[in-house]
Length: 352
Image (spheres, rainbow, N blue to C red):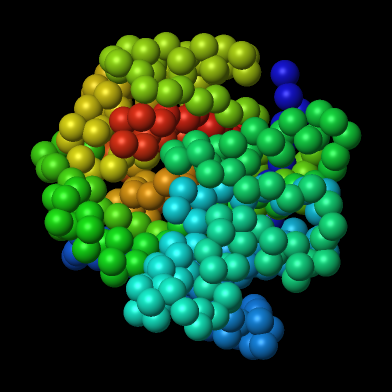
């Protein structure tokens, strides 16, 4: 069994006020549209203005979230950086391709092309930190962030001591327009994803980074393990995988204080998870999180940030709850995240 990964610092930019690390659902931002925009800070407080003017939004969000995490962890360097993203720096990709068309493939500036690659965020973080250690970017659709967790835990088995991991995603007006024309989006004004009434998702964006350590000194919570499942055919397959995963960590579903689901809001895409919720909501405290951050490839990073905060604060916010919970303490959280009914992941967090 892989070593545990202790969270000693976190930073999150999302459609909620998560930039403030002291914020914990004192108020919830409601987005009455089919996409949720990240609430971005004044980046000049975190990034050198000379570097800032050349950065796209995804890079700004990722670098800032990483900066907040490393500041909280009080570390200046790490043994490895693992970034996860589905679309990468999509804005820069669009900018370069549009310039290519407008200028008839002539007189093109290279900046947008250079910064359009998926690994740009990880490389910028390394340049700013002056970190010459292991640096890897995962582009595994709905498994992108989860692959970072697995990589970090394996690096601890190999003798490394710290890792900076994160998930980054941005959307653009063109990308939103394409999804609207494909009828993939919906506004979900009531945000009750767990009732399974609607078709279409609410698209989101954001960045969440974590500094992980192989020791529990100054840790807020611990990632005990992670597992992934590809294209299950029935909900029982997901439940069986979850049961087996928990058994590997010497626990069971009945002993989990909160099961946190990554529901997209689309009743067809969520059908397996909705079946599981109906079966366990009488015995477990159950919550969900994508009505707060939207659906995107690395939304699991926001879910991990939320689970970490719940354990840290020992409180399940009303905005997260699906069923009424009388839990006075939260020692374990199981995140069951689904992406487009293709990628499913199971992340177990516990109190240190």
